[in-house]
Image (tube, rainbow, N blue to C red; front, top):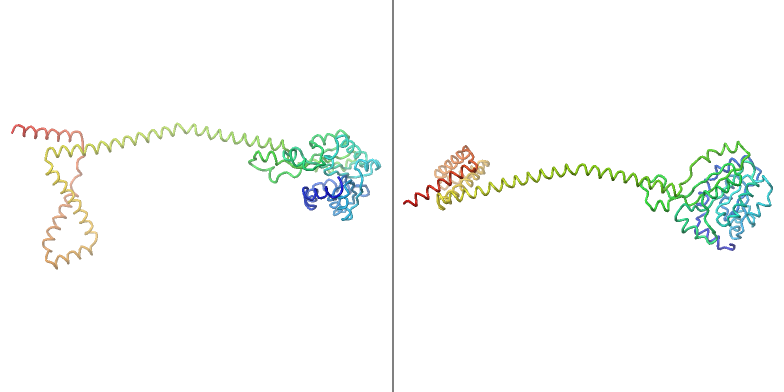
Length: 398
């Protein structure tokens, strides 16, 4: 695809030059030792596109050349004075001598090629690389559900996604000594998230991956790069799924523990509720029996003594309560007591009120010293009933 369409497409969907270069910095620890070992060797970028990798290498004092067939992309490189050629990637490799390059890169190229051409390209790179040289191939990662089903096909020049294990196997099969899969651009924080959702599993895996393959024949370079080949990069969709399964199992285990504890506590709670219910019923029955007993006793007393006598007795009780409250109120307020005395002296009622006051205090003292009225019992009610029966019998004889 030529002209300006693909360049505009990359600008919109791949990201800015600064963002792409930031992502490409992950390869610098692999590349720098190799370039230092072969300062005069060729560093080649196949399908160089807008030249982000070439520009990044240039800032690190590494001279590189790029090839691409898209003239719009090459114009972007030429505007930055980057060394580029309009040439097919595989054809450019075939023109190079054996062992002439230290590093060959192909960022987002192999997904544009038929699989047979991918194998030919990897084989040609192996021929062209020096001992200990590196091949870097980056491509979209189909382990990410959104990449495999949607974003990969957003680019009309993509043919088919290549699983990481397949591309790594191609490099191993064609004779590379060390092969490393780098998973890149996963969702931020997904590797340490304590509670993964299914959306995290489907969309959180690394969106891109790279296969970094090293040619044999240079033990020192192999040893110097081993630490990077041993390092873990990104996270796969399978790893996310496994973590989600473990978290789900852990949640289910905790839930079952909570249910077990609840089942153990349920009988205890039921027993406590039963005891409270019995206590409530008992207290309710006591209150009911006490009220009913009092009402029955009052009816018996009315039948024995007459209604008028009982009303007078009730009135006396009310007066005692009122006077008792009045005495307490006045005695608790000395100023009010003195004021009442002065007013009674002015109107000439002091002797009369004094006698009433003394009488009320005497009654209050007697009431406070008297014992509490005996509780209503079956025996007391029986005695009352016997007295009433005797009274009614006497009246009948008369």
